[in-house]
Amino acid sequence: MSDMGENKDTDIQSVTDVKKPETTGSVIKEVFSFFLYLAVILLLTFLMLHFVGQRTVVNGHSMETTLQDHDSLIIDKLSYRFKDPERFDIIVFPYQYAEDTYYIKRIIGLPGETVFIDDEGTIYIDGQELKEGYGREIIEDPGRAAEPIELGPDEYFVLGDNRNESEDSRFSDVAEIKRDIILGKAFVRIFPFNNFTLLDHDYNNKAIVEN
Image (cartoon, rainbow, N blue to C red; front, side, top):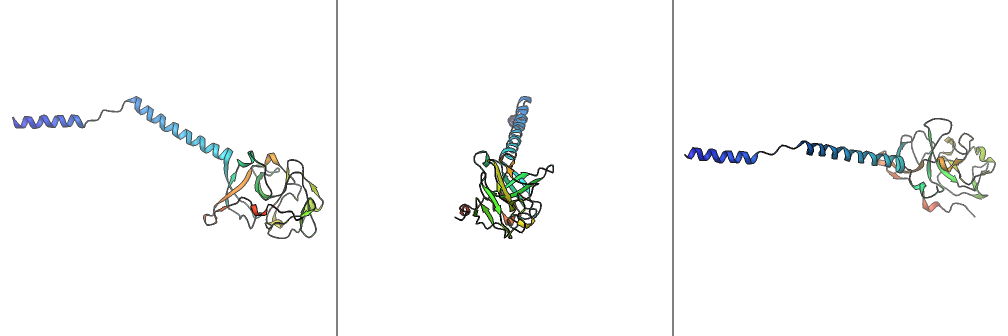
């Protein structure tokens, strides 16, 4: 009799421990939720890369010493939707004579201004000397800017920081940069990791035209 009682308790415990199998509907719901979550992540990533930021790698030496060959940057593509580019911003724009080729340069002249570079490499904005410390060297070749260049209402004059190793607005294949082709501005250097740097322009340098 005692053996029968023990078996009865065991049977009850066994029945209690058995879990009900998941229904097909609940499995489908979990799979759907997973793919919906994945789709949202992919959509947000696409929107971030397409409208907000984009990673790019520096190829060349025209922006030394500010930027080095193989530096990895994040380009801010959103700011210029709400405000105009400013002097000393480092911008990225497509090179018109080569597919999938982009240049990275620093804005020197703004829309409506006249840019002139004399034989000594001094930059003038509207006839007044530009005081800035970004140029690695004194400009040896003023190029087109040996004669005053008047910028249109949506045009920018750009230079590389490595002035004597840069193809920029001084030369006709680059010339003035139209506002609507600017991809964005270099915002932060993310690699190499030991040189992580915010690249927003120096606000202490905004009063740059010597009166």
